[in-house]
Image 1 (cartoon, rainbow, N blue to C red):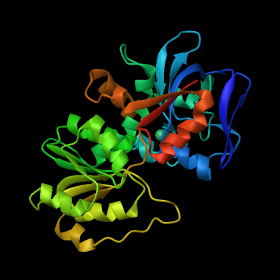
Image 2: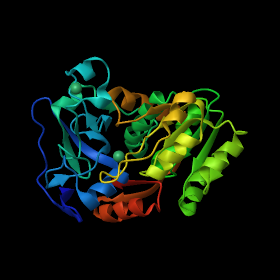
Image 3: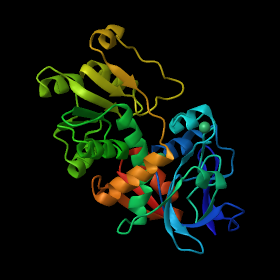
Image 4: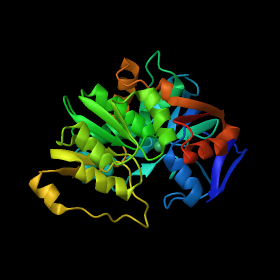
Amino acid sequence: MKVARFHAPGDIRVEDAPEPQAGPGELKIRVRNCSTCGTDAKIFKYGHHHIRPPRVMGHEIAGEVVGTGERVQVIAAIPCGACQDCVRGRMTVCPNQESMGYHYDGGFAEYMVVPAKVQAVGGVNRIPDGVGFAEASVAEPLACVLNGQQLARVGPGDDVVVMGAGPIGCLHVRLARARGAARVALVDVNADRLAMAAKLVEPDAVIDADPVEAVLELTGGRGADVVITAAASGAAQEQALRMAARQGRISFFGGLPKDDPIISCDSNLVHYRELTIVGANGSSPAHNAEALALIASGAVPVADLITHRLPLDGVLDAIDLVSRGAAIKVTIEP
Ligand SMILES: [Zn+2]
Ligand SMILES: [Zn+2]
């Protein structure tokens, strides 16, 4: 079979590999869609400390179980299910977490094996009728977005600002609407990408410069109830703190570069305005199931966000599209 394997930074090869065989408790899957995200572009460029090459990449996985033909979506982050955090329901911060496409071969392949520990934590979801494989593959990033908005308590009547108009930003806009947000503004410094995203998700306001001033103006000086930074930008995080309303919640959804993670924060803003700053680290199996249900019910449409479909041979083109910000969602169809 054909696979796309990471060998070293800058070196991903589409090559032949033996078809994997499922052992006890494992599931063999014919991958139908595995979508790409910013993380894949980052791995291609820099590698990742959890990836020991060669490794089949791809963690936004949907396919058919070989033998039964059941249509399934697979989680990316695998919690252990047994540690204190897992037992207390905090699976996104399990210290023993492993990931598909990192510790285990992922979905940029015709076939893959789902480890037993994925099934043990309920990490294989049946795809509801009427939901395509490509849409189902987007359940994983939507699950991460759902985790972020739960932690930031996005709810009815909120004015929400999403900073970063990539695929994650688009999902944040859609989910905020589904959760009853009053108004959603979308911010990006890249005007082309912002225009492309805005055409699809139709935010109430589109901001490409001076976001703090723009948000304060939009909200009559009050600020936004929730600000979500979906960009690897310390400047965006600092701006987010300054555009939050009293009792506002700020989600540092996107991480910062490892070598440049320090920002400045006026602690008195947080103190007097009773701000809440939250992080977000992936998603739990339950988030994946809920995300799939949100897609199936039509509450969060994702089909139109899939702007590019490429065969496995096109995986480097897909990563290039993602890293240039020239696409919303790029999916691989092995
Ligand atoms: Zn991803
Ligand atoms: Zn755990």
